[in-house]
Length: 214
Image (cartoon, rainbow, N blue to C red; front, side, top):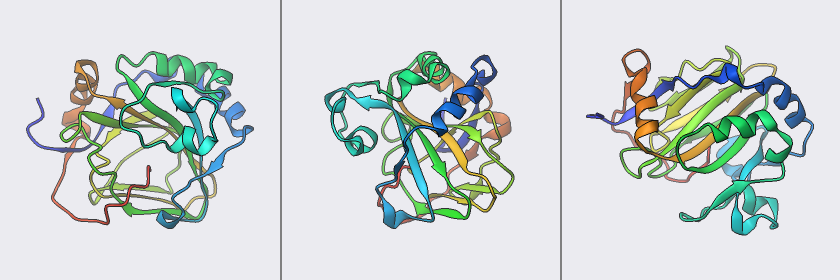
C-alpha cells in the first residue's frame, strides 16, 4: 500500500460527531505542565496528559506525560476522566493508543527542528496523529520542508521521524490533540483514504536526533 515513506496526510476522522469545543474550554482551566525538553523550543509550550502509563497512574505528572518506556499499558488519566468528548473520540479509535496529550504552543513560540526517531509507520509500525483544535493561519507546521495545511477541526498523520518544526506567530495558542498509536489495518485505511490530495513523500534529510514530542 505504501511504496514510499509518507511525510503527512490528512485523516477522515469525523470530528464533528464529538463536542470537543466545550471540552476544550474545560481543559484550558486545568493545570497544564511545561514541556520538559526546554532546550528544544523557544517561548512557552505546555502539555495536558490524557492517557497515562498504568504503572505511573499515581506517579509524578512528568512520568505520566513523558514516559519513554516502549512497552507499557496506557489508561485513561485523571484529566481525561473530566473530558467526556475527548474520551469518546479516543474510544472511537480502532487501534491501540500508546499516549494522548493536549499540546499547547503559545503565541510567539517556536518548536525547533527535530526528529522523534523511528516514530513513523515505515520504521516502527507506530503513528503520530495531530488533531487541530486551536489553530490559525499564523501557525507554520513543517515536516521535511513541507508546510502541513492544518486547520481547525482536522486530523493528520505526520511522519515524526522526519525533521519537523512548529512556529506560532499568531496571537492565540495553538492547541493540538497529539495521539501516538500502533498501526493496524484500520489506521492504514485512514492514512490511505485521502492520500491523493494531501500526501507528501519524504526526502532524505538530517537533523539533530533529540526527540521533542511536537
